[in-house]
Amino acid sequence: MAAIYTALIPVPPPQRFTHSITPNISTLRMVTGSNPRMPKTEIRVAQLKEGIAEFYDESSGVWEDIWGDHMHHGFYDKNQDENNNTDHRAAQIRMIEKTLSFAQIPDEPEMPRSVVDVGCGIGGSSRYLATKYGANVKGITLSPMQVARATVLTAAAGLGHRVDFQVADALNQPFPDGQFDLVWSMESGEHMPDKEKFMKELVRVATPKGSIIIVTWCHRDLLPGEVSLKPSEQELLDKICSAFYLPAWCSGADYVNLAQALSLEDIKTTDWSENVAPFWPAVISSALSWRGFMGIFRSGWKTIKGAFAMTLMVKGYKQGLIKFTVITARKPT
Image (cartoon, rainbow, N blue to C red; front, side, top):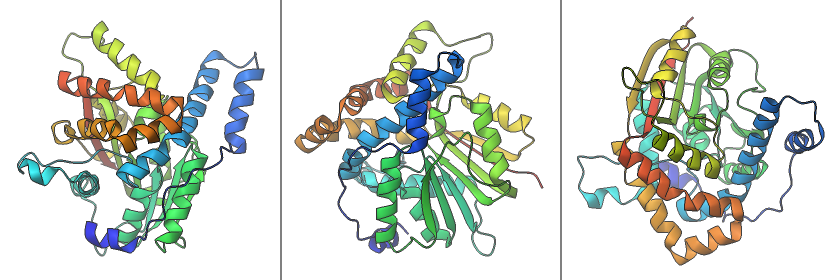
């Protein structure tokens, strides 16, 4: 499937867009800077969303230039020899397929026909799912640059009639209730400041019996008797949050509890931390190449700050603090 998908897309080169913030992002900027009556929590959330948008506006081009159109971890098979785990773009496609398999997404005749890609990046997953299932796909992201680039790549792939993108907030999605057979969130949940509201929105836009897939960074589950992470662990996560514009982390168990509270069915979760272990070292290696270094340097300070934090991600995985978590469920009828 990966080979077919690659052959379908004559990918235009990454573009350097002129920075242009859409009205909803510029509104966030005006609100955070000129409304002293706005509650501090709302100000922090607005600033977080603006930071996320600008971070991906800056960094998406250099990521695509080196790693392609899938902006997420790869899945590496622990039973394969090292030579079979060095194709990192293939590992990113494998991540999608492994996730669909874990969630038991059906093939014909019950395959999904309508999909929302929440936190779509430059549309890698959106185009893959549209091609695999013949589905209509909506992608949303806070980054105007990602929407622009995703639209270009989708048109080049001949999928513009079935896949489209817009700037939108995952916590307030611009879709009616019960629209999508498959609700897909690949590494966007970590950016959500309100995990409960995030889950409620995913459930709201799913059809009855629709599948919900969340693949996200979590911290380890707390041990019996623990009420919080260790101070050193929290300090490490705080540094990562500052670099990647993340709010407070939660655990996989927290997501399961939210799914149960929303009466979801067929709830499953797994930890693929060991399967993604080679990913961040590979990203660091690419960043240290001349091409990667110059791309990061040209992209801007937010990207540079994120690059410095990559070693913190490796440290978090090695300590068992960071967990690469998959949560799948179905909406009840």
